[in-house]
Amino acid sequence: MLPFKSKSQDDSRLSHFSFPQMIRNFWRLHSTKITILNRDFVADSMTNVGPSIVSKLDRKLHLQPNHPLNILKTKIEAYFHGINPGYCVLDSMNPIVTTKQNFDDLLFTPQHPGRSKTDTYYIDNKHVLRTHTSAHQSEAIASKRSNQYLLTADVYRRDEIDPTHYPVFHQMEGIRLFSTQSLETELNIERFNDSKEIPIPKPSNDNPYQQVHDPRHVELVGQHLRKSLEGLMRYLFHQDLQIRWIDGYFPFTSPSWEMEVYYNNQWLELCGCGVIEQDILNEFGAQDKIGWAFGLGLERIAMVLFDIPDIRLFWSQDQRFLSQFQNGKITKFVPFSKYPVCYKDVSFWMKEEFHDNDFAEIVRQFAGDLVEQVKLIDEFKNKKGRVSRCYRIEYRSMERTLTNEEVDAIQERIRDQVVSHFGVELR
Image (cartoon, rainbow, N blue to C red; front, side, top):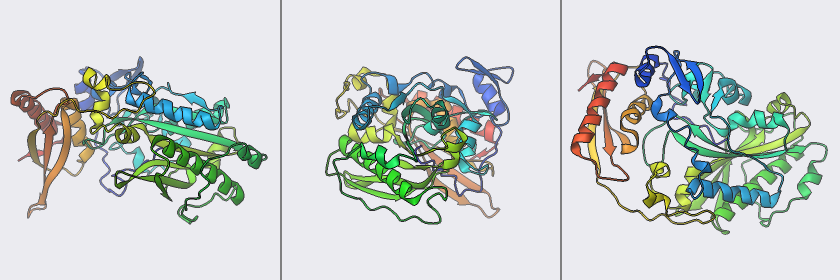
């Protein structure tokens, strides 16, 4: 349930660009049939997922022993089991979900930017690659296997290219349900070492208590949630860690908060959370419950704890990276080399339908993890109102020195694809 924030949120240019021909070219098919994880789908006007993303589906980094993400996942699970051993761990869910699971069950409005093709990987108009672990929240609640869950999964979002963003990352979600009839009794069983209260924003029209809830219940559940997460961050970092809470806004919780911690002289946003919308609990058989949920990004925390400077490194199969980590230990990453960067620019006249994430997707398809960053370095409008953009693509392998010849070949393919698929005019 990590905050679903979209750079497209206030962008009236949310793209409805049709990708099926592009996908058919990528998959080298003569029909619109796509097979993913042994399931057959038919590409349609919403399809925008290609082979470079599908190739990641079976990697499951969070389940690989001695991998930083698995080490962090295990530590978080150990912390919550220390509070209460009843947490049910779910970490092998199928990444293909329906739009109902990913959006409708979580009360996303039809106009929510998270549904946009610029943000989400659509397989067809009814199936997506999950954009958050919350896509499995309703399934977990309805199963009634437990009143408390820890869900971990790889999630997929179309995004920019830089050292801290990747189209596949990993989330961990916590869900805790309480009986409205015995709430205070259940809460009294658990104690937290830190009794210091950290101020929180007051309820507001934008971030209200739900009318169906007893305000006292909301206060108790919210306090339990925040104390649980404050303890987690001090467990992972250090006991005198500075923490603050700010308002959050998510379709599936209210009130909602975001946690920020002060680390290495900067405030880091690490977690989104809140009191679960009662409509969700009612829909999935938990009418007599009130509960909280949180979501956090494992890469975001692991990059800080392990001193990993580039998110692409998590996907490296180079033993110079992997051999540095061991189950149960937080080890600072020692860079084994810094290979030279190669800069290539591409400039073109824009089309109205064009979106930055569409360009990033073309780069990913043909350059993969050889690109460290893509920057918009220039934009101007001529007297006729045409808009030109110049993007700088920074090529740098994490494992070897790239040659000019191979970079030129990739760059030429990117230039060709931008023209053929988006109809732009190169400059």
